[in-house]
Image 1 (cartoon, one colour):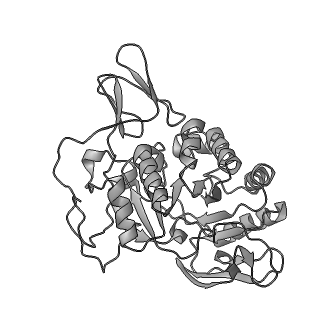
Image 2 (cartoon, one colour):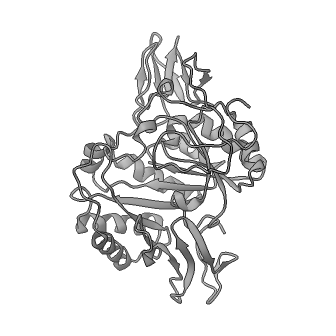
Image 3 (cartoon, helix red, strand yellow):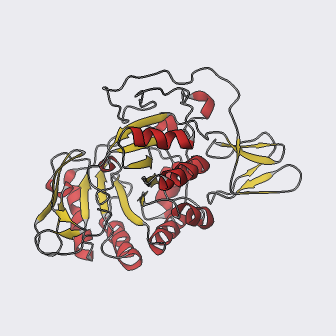
Length: 370
């Protein structure tokens, strides 16, 4: 294994990323060199030597020598290759609460992986140093899918997660790691913007256990303005994840003046209930100024509480307030008897009263993977 040896694991790229100081850190790849290539899974050849990527709704048409919008796919002689395969810029141990995934074996150890690149251009991205970079611009480790799984097992992880940037941008690596992980008895999860085409999504869901999708807003105007993207493909992805019965949670980052209107929040919550059900956990998380949106203030806690109240009025059963340390609505309560099920402090789980997927007190079934 190149770049990682013994217990050497570290996080590269952004201040929001976590690393574990007890591990001996080894040197990542820093020299610029020819990036190893792997042919992409979803693309088609066009006239001449042009190709069209079919992974996400952008369907980039790429000339010979050109790259995709996510910066990770390159056309070489009429074949499309992924450049980030086996090249994670971040390798660390965290918990599912970081995602957040609150109903996914709470508190377990997970190996978190990320490669550079993203098919969005979010103006508030907290990890923009790696999400908006090319593979040549950042340090990375050489870690094959098999090596990633072995590393997770050696460190006592119960799952592997793809997070921090956009896993769709390194689809082939994510898919192969997930496939090997399942073969070795490890769970996998993805933290995604959901901007992916149905065919590659359905294929991925065959080897993934849990999905967290950022529903960034509920208008095309918001998606265009803030993320340079569209809403409808994300809604389609949410429906597909639910249809395929893969465990799902949703996060909505509430950005002042952009997506914090009560009417839009109500419309979003009603759509979730009508299309996905009332038991899909929804997290309203607090925005902090970052990247290209540094002129905005942090989201008022009262706005998050207003959003949660609307979601409750609509009938959603598991609604959380995130990025507000110590807030009582960061905990899980039984929707039937109202008793505390999971007590959290930051990313730590202090108490868990879910047994065999049910409330210990009244027996109510609690959705999730327990």
